[in-house]
Amino acid sequence: MTHPLRLAPGPVDLSALSTEETPDFDGGKSEGKEELAELGPELADLQEKLFAEGRSGGRRSVLLVLQGMDTSGKGGTVRHTMGLVDPQGVSITAFGPPTAEELEHDFLWRIEQQLPEPGRIGVFDRSHYEDVLIGRVRALAGPEEIERRYEAINDFEARVAASGTTIVKCLLHISAAEQKERLAKRLDRPDKHWKFQPGDIDDRSLWPAFQEAYEIALERTNTEAAPWYVVPADRKWYRNLAVARLLVDTLREMDLAWPEADFDVAEQQRRLRDADPLG
Amino acid sequence: MTHPLRLAPGPVDLSALSTEETPDFDGGKSEGKEELAELGPELADLQEKLFAEGRSGGRRSVLLVLQGMDTSGKGGTVRHTMGLVDPQGVSITAFGPPTAEELEHDFLWRIEQQLPEPGRIGVFDRSHYEDVLIGRVRALAGPEEIERRYEAINDFEARVAASGTTIVKCLLHISAAEQKERLAKRLDRPDKHWKFQPGDIDDRSLWPAFQEAYEIALERTNTEAAPWYVVPADRKWYRNLAVARLLVDTLREMDLAWPEADFDVAEQQRRLRDADPLG
Image 1 (cartoon, rainbow over the protein chains, first blue to last red):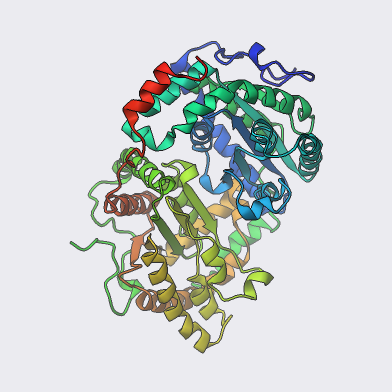
Image 2 (cartoon, chains in turn red, yellow; image 1 turned 135 degrees about the vertical axis):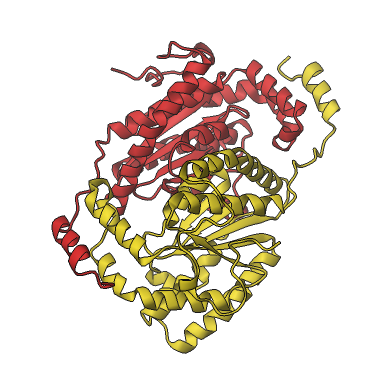
């Protein structure tokens, strides 16, 4: 059965996709938080098995790509999902504007360097998709270069997937009205001022252009090797739950198991009991 | 008042330092776990303030160095303390045997690259101390080079501290008997087999040599800029609590506060209300 948040193939109309519904979940906020907490132990167990596999010669890993408009909750999603597992098994990268050195290379150069090692769950808070989103909206690259990038991304992601990394891409989909509320809240609370910049308000004039850029990017890069999920994100609790569920589903499908001992367990037990070098 | 776990200056006798007492804590396991959980929100709040400061131009960071014999619980300490805060604000590095490339450089080269960025809590699971511990015990470097390294470490740590990084170094101090129990448990549980290698038993013959190497290293590098704490670690719950408390104390002393807005809040509130580009 197709996952309810899996983006269907073909042209994308984001305005037709809900930002506030809670697909595949009947309860409200408190039930949603409860289910998230209940998923924690399984997610932690699966993550540890993946880590153990990586330490035992396995090559597999998971990459969660989070995209979304400002205030869509990429950081909050990381905190509430990755906060459930051992931080040693996770590598989180927040991609900002490229540095001078990064600009001297192809746009995928800095991305490749942050791919998760075997056994890890990698999380990208923004990613190479910025190079076809803000890149397109602010014309940081010409139309031909933007066009080239969609295929470059697909080739890159296919190669990464083939090397053992399961890629899950999520658009945290919020409404413009919800963004306005979140910006207002950042202004109302002194402990949130550091997250606000006056330019955030100006940027709202680019909302339609960004939605269009997302629609094109999602359509062009929604592959079997690296599928897109559109997560209704106006409700934070549902967004967190939906991404945690996706991670659990992804890890379950990997059929993870504790690595077999490559030594004779009984023999080592005897040694430790009867031949301890410390007596 | 001196911290109860702070290593006193002068010669170190690890056999005289308890591995099982619970300094500065009267309760038992359940009370210890309760206090750790209660510290969580404050630790998370302090960590977020540090992160906000780093995003607002601040240069400060924290570096927690964890050392200890095999099975002393370095990984468990990371999970139970850093698991209380936003994983985005933490950078964790586990140092294994140096690679061929790393061996071509000075021993501090790979360490320098993993220092926490401003606003972060960095955690080293093993560190440059391995280069005077296993380095000495297995004679991976000559006596003169080992001798040189103590001073090189002090110079390095003083420079790192002067640049804004508060360094906290912890020896997780376990007894040889406790290590034996933990190895036995790893053998008894199939979900722990991946953590065991037969060499772990052989290495117990080096226990006295490692204790001596620790005593020398701790004495030589117990500076004001980067002090050592010896954490009794036979009881996991106490070890976790003691390290969490140390982190809370460290962050409290930094007098962290939410960054001041560098814009006129009321003006931005008016703009968002009356001049929203999206209408």
